[in-house]
Length: 265
Image (tube, rainbow, N blue to C red; front, side, top):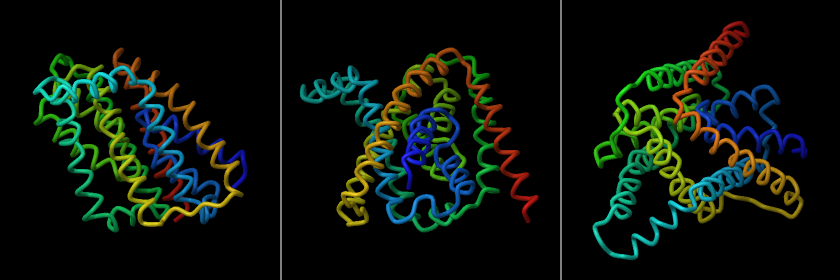
């Protein structure tokens, strides 16, 4: 992998992790354009590094909230911080179940199935459009809401379904305050990312050699910086109810992906 390819993939991961356009869907499209050998043996290692970078950028953006949550937990009281942490744990359960029991089934969707990506991008487009039209958004995240949002996150394992788009849209459609919906959406995925990284490390799936340091470092930095920018931008977009722009983008890319696939068959 060249440095240019590492930069491109780092930027794509950093932006699409937060922007509601599906990082997995776009990475599948990029692999289709560059070729299946774009990410050879170091594929998993590089992917893990990019996800670690975006998780770190999330913690940087929400560092104040994270510190407050940690301090609240050490008070050992039934306070807002403890309840928020429990809601995060609840939201993780559907994705954990999907990952543990249906991993092979989901992996089968990541074999250059651009037609599927196209249709799922259109689904993401509709979710964003409906969320943008929601009027009553003043509620807090409840424990029941956390489970529903967690289910939408689990479904976002499918390439083309935006994780941030699905979770924020479902939150807003449940009547949750837009800013709180975005904060919950971005923080709920951090434990899952670190859990997945830990699983890959312990299983020995990650391979590393000194020759990869340059490419991995470039990918990490670009993904981290792009993630900082995208996270701040997305918070502003959700607050101002401007998701319809991304709905249009996802719809166009989805139609293009479907058209290209059908024309090549």
